[in-house]
Image 1 (cartoon, helix red, strand yellow):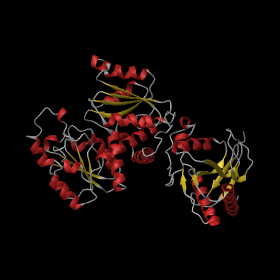
Image 2 (cartoon, one colour):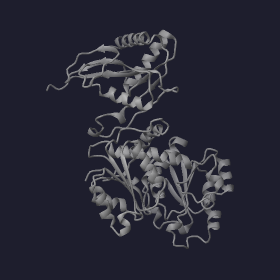
Image 3 (tube, chains in turn cyan, blue):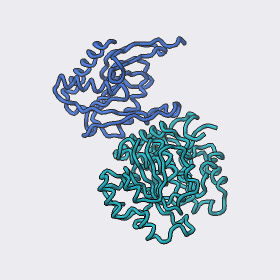
Image 4 (cartoon, each protein chain N blue to C red):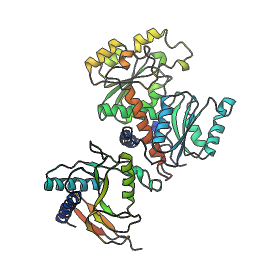
Length: 320
Length: 174
């Protein structure tokens, strides 16, 4: 089996992460050029296979592929044979049989991308599988924070919110700790996954249920996670209001954060529930990097597509 | 070539560039990483010495434009830095260390056309070793080095390497 996928940050070592981020820096410049096009992936075909809704991930993969001159096709479950009951395996094999070079896949089942990578010959990029991982989101978050703060070694980053249902958190934890950052995961006990301590073999990660205490300890960045209403079958917290009081980035918390560290970075992978996990004041604050994250998304995905697809050599990618 | 040989060659090329351009006006020098950047820097310094004008310099990475991307393991791209003012309607002098097949220059021309529309593009190389595979020639050459394809031309420039030196290394006999 050749290595040619991006399924999990677990498969990517620190040097490879730094390489992806460095290439993303060069790709970022293309966004400001008059001719936003590089010929590196001319003649390659990338298929976005999305079984779940997405705006920014799907469109940024599409833009990334197109700016590298690849042909990009979008398939969403709604309106495809998947809605007629076709299995994931049949859908993936069908698309692969058309001769595509890469499949970017999002699916509600954890491990879906890994499964698909076992069935087909094309490169597989995990664009979110259930509550497991979302590696390109972690890479773009790291890229955004690195542009803001410089090297992340020794930085303290708090990831706050719905840890149980978030795929972003696991990828981010792995990615940030590999880059040497210290990560604190903050959530109400009900939204804390069981076995969280076994998540990262990495050093420098801790867990807390007291947001104010963590913020008072000093942070370089706070990453607010979306409260995923669609994955909640109820009972995780009494009322949205109560969640906001305990774990939302409210105006008073924002003011305290900025007073303690004017350089603090506020991130959110989007889409935001304004007024729930993040107040409008925080989302639009000068310290908010939410839109930088979106623009970084294109550059980082260009970098990933380039590293996976540009060479015809078999030994590429990050998954065994 | 020894260090003084290289310095003399660069100085002569600077004079040629100025003469051809009738001054240093509207010039932009772009070096192709990695050693072309050092050639560009030295050329600009030599022109500044003669004319007293600072010529904008930058770097032009051609990794994405290579015609052998698929045959090689993935290469990480190097920086492209275009000076403020851009390249539109400028005289762009591309600088590189060795001119060989001409494929790098072909890629550089493609890369340039995505960045703007220069009035003219010229090519300055420290060493021309022959064996072109494309209809491309240099405008300014530091030294013509007739070589066999089995030989390797080693260019080392302080700034990238420890010292200045150009030498021909014997390759494996076919």
